[in-house]
Image: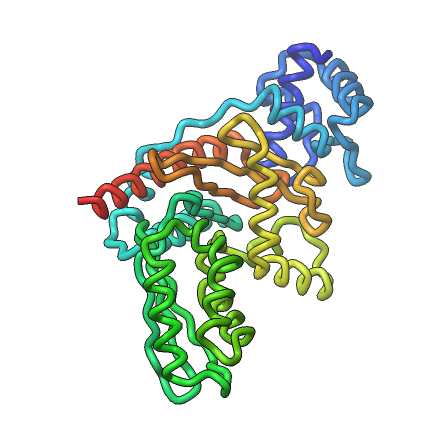
Length: 347
């Protein structure tokens, strides 16, 4: 159980270390308002060190926060800062441009967050469970390449170039498009997913000499419609967050930042709390590459369209109070922008 003075000492050390990156001594704490003698403050610092909340560096008599110290601060001492009008206007102006689909807004949100903080930002749109497949078409590029265009009712358009197997003719592609429009368009994505594994294979066996090849093409074309797309901005900012700068680790981090499944899992772990905003520090993030960092994850809800997630990855010495306040405001602004866009689609 910490005394009020010890709590204030820990809070001031974390705030000072966040601002300067240098160990904090008793003299600085006296200047910052701790009304006790230097000896008393040093005793309290020693106690906090024994509790595992502070670390003593070799280079000076000052102290720096430990991971446990940050955790205690976030759990017991954190008071979210109020975001200034200037930053709020900047966020609203960034969302004020014209968007052509939902994913444009989700992608822009990651860019805004990263620009505001110089951290790595992640953005995951509202859940796909209620989406319907509303359009599908194939556009030939040449004899062996096509573009498949998929549209859902929530304003998402996916297009991808595919190489067509030599065994698949243009008539096969026409038949494939007809099957998708007859059997799948207008259905919820979960129904589409289910039919791709039950009804569609039987239909393909009826119409095609090489049904296995056509099934692979079906899966390739429609499979990415079910993926949760994580937008990332400021990927390589992580190199500034106290990482060891060896080439192997840089390669590993770069690879990790390109892996959609790994990023989706990273964000989903932070979504397993009862609070809309969660802060994970060091090993709590659950990835060895990020053990010297902190991650703040926030959910937002768009009425009638599910929940989405935004997150920031930064140094353990991030200004938690300011970042918490910023993320809280940002999630509401993003939900508001998405809600307005969905209403526009329904008009």
